[in-house]
Length: 172
Image (tube, one colour):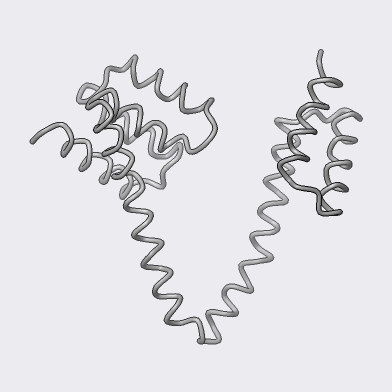
C-alpha cells in the first residue's frame, strides 16, 4: 500500500474513533509515530498546531501528512480528517430535515438553546478566571467589551481592541 492510501486510512480511522481535538492526539501518536513521523517531529507538530489559529487536529493532520508524503500527503490527511465528521453532520442534517415538521424536533431544538447559552457562560467564566486578568483592569475590559457587544459592535473589532488595551494596561 502506498503512503497516500496509508495516510488516508490512518486519518479516517483516527477521526472515526476519537472526538478530535486533544482526544485524537493520543490515538494519532500511537498511529503516526514510527510509521509516518519520528517522536520529535510529532512533538514539534503538536506544539506548532497548538499555537497557530484554527483547528489543532486539522493542522496536526496536515503536518504529519506533509512530513510523510509532501503536499499530496498533507492534502490527503486533511481530506481524511474532515470526511468523517462532514458525512456524519450531513446525515444528521438530512434526518432532521425530514423530521423538521415533527413537534418533538422543534421542542428538542428549543431545549438546546438555553443549555448551550449556559454552557457558553460557564466556559467564558472559566476562561476569564484562569486565562484572564482578574484585577480591576480586567473587569473594566470585560464590562466595556460586554457593553460594546450589547450595542451591536462587531465582535472581532471588540476582541482586537480588548487585546490591544490588555497589551497597554496589563503589561507587567
